[in-house]
Length: 283
Ligand SMILES: [Zn+2]
Image (cartoon, rainbow, N blue to C red; front, side):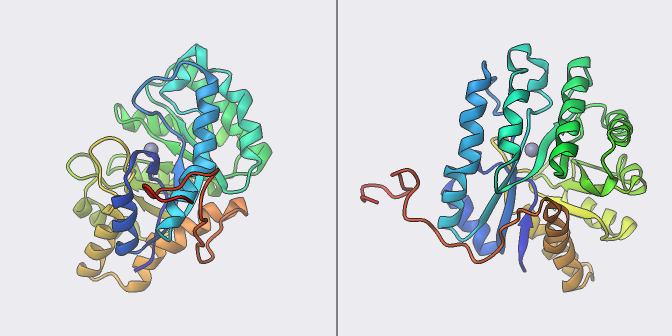
């Protein structure tokens, strides 16, 4: 089983996770820029974070045979901090870079006017840079947030096939499927979407334009949930081709719209800027 995790925050994960992900079949992933739990206080720290998503983290992933790409954005939660508005000015420089395969994650957290402004500015940047967009839907008031997201996306001028609306559930899946956007489901260990509910949704809506991710980060999450969904699909009577479509072909088709996916055999570099993941060994 080959797996492309379309939404995972590897900066928060360990080398053990990379090893277990490779063993489970993960060969490629997208790491969207997001909130780090600890509030940031200036745009400069975002520049360092974005540089890490384009430098150190792909180096680290390649040591374990995994192709790392990223999405770059000012996340919905920190869109509310006026000190960080300057991050929008940094984005054009990063959106032009190789391995940046989308604008993301953008969207709503609490649906404030500041979030509206930042979301619309970033949708305009995606249009200008011809990049797909990964849109996060709020964990609270998800149904209303998703409907509003679809309205804003429609007004942006971006075609629906350039949009992935993520963190969906039974309440929001139909509206997104009907919109022509891609549907993303984040499968978590205990809360929100789980493996069995995911299988039921795949039975209901089919496998077209559906992506499954672990959204693993610094919180309670599991980077092997993509594999768990693949196994559960097979156990439920889906074919290997169905599994490959959801876990590989669909994410490749969506992010492939950037023209920047690099899925050839990964060759690990000896070091990154003179540093390595080894301990006590010179590069
Ligand atoms: Zn995320």
